[in-house]
Image 1 (cartoon, rainbow, N blue to C red):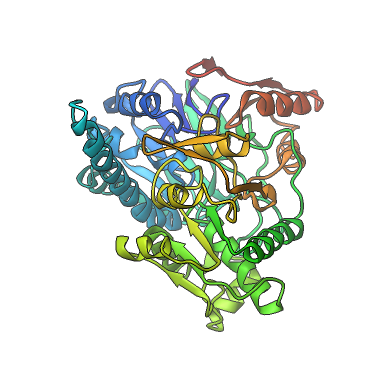
Image 2 (image 1 turned 90 degrees about the horizontal axis):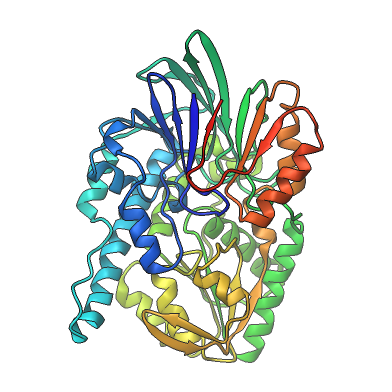
Length: 463
């Protein structure tokens, strides 16, 4: 039995891990690689294996860096099912379609520019038609119920507490008379986070593939992050500016609305217009209301009592392009939440284009930013930002508030892995930049009972 780490090895995007037995080839996630445009397109367009050879795909959750390249795989001949939780099924239906729409939209926008320069036409990575074809392969499963794969094996999905429907995957695979019990954390959530349940404990594993997004850092508390949000809003409003927040449409958007609503009602921030400029976020919020099984007790009770934590008087969801453009004509302070969360695509780019050169404004980064993304460059202090091929001076204040992270921090990750230390034979540390992955691997080695590997990109390990 072998595992090949085709994506999110020593980086945080493009999650894709292939388990090969004598009878099966199981792909864990198939995410978009995000980074420099040309490199990202090349890597995403050409999977490093024959999609027709894959027997099963298991999707940990709906975030695009884990699900976003499924249409490419299906377009290139993947014949099987895509297994996930029922909530992930519903969210991915929205997110994969939205990703395809963004691929088409961005290609068309860039094509206008390149055609004027006599360059070849820009083709999207995949189309909405490709996305629809991929969605026909999805099969939703309940948490905590075993299901069989086509070959010799079975799978159970445990709650990861990261976003709605996120799952820890546990596989039991038989090869040559021996059963291997392999766990995959996907993206692991935090304990005591608002809205969602805590991550489940998983024990009795032989091998574990674990994320390390924050493998060498401990998060501020949620309350500290909320205070930073309130300060950014209040100070920017006092300057007469706008707060631009790049967000993931699923998870981060709903958490921020939860806190903004609470702060407005408590008088901690001014009563400003709050725009969620993302059709995807609107649809995702509707999906949230369908899946009470994913919520903590407080949120579940509020929804059952029709006290919607995702709606309040100052809030406006904008669906159309015209509504989105109208926000940029607003001359008074406002809060704008727009996707994508790493500033690599979508409506956030238009808001940055119109607002980043105004010193009154604030760009508030509230999520992890992968290397070579615009969001990371902004946090690193770049003076000029390239947006849609044009350069803009960065005059807006750039602030970070990573305490909202939906990823477990180093302490939480360590405790979660340690619960299986008595049975583990090996741990593979993925989904973290090299520094954080290595630091987390060193911490795990202190447990002293199993091998710890930080795989290279496309490295194959035999179990």
